[in-house]
Amino acid sequence: MKKKFDKKIVKGIITPAAWKNDTVVEISIHTTDEEEFIVEHNDTGREMFSFIHYPVEVSGHIKPRISDGKMIISVEKCVTTIASNNDVFI
Image (tube, rainbow, N blue to C red; front, side, top):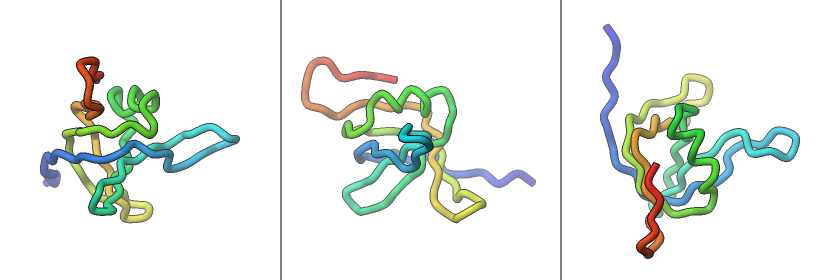
């Protein structure tokens, strides 16, 4: 039976999580509670590379990564939380 993972809303800042040859290849969201969620490489996750160091609110499903136990979020929706009328929606 396939395990179902809960959908969650996470607020934090997008930060680089891994590099290869000086290029960011993985990003994560760091929360004010010092939690880290690695962003899965789905369509929305790949678009988020343009928003490194931006504060965001994302919703998606969270599960532990098998290789190291870090939490991964499969982002379904992402909104920058900069106070302006030009919020970016992904």
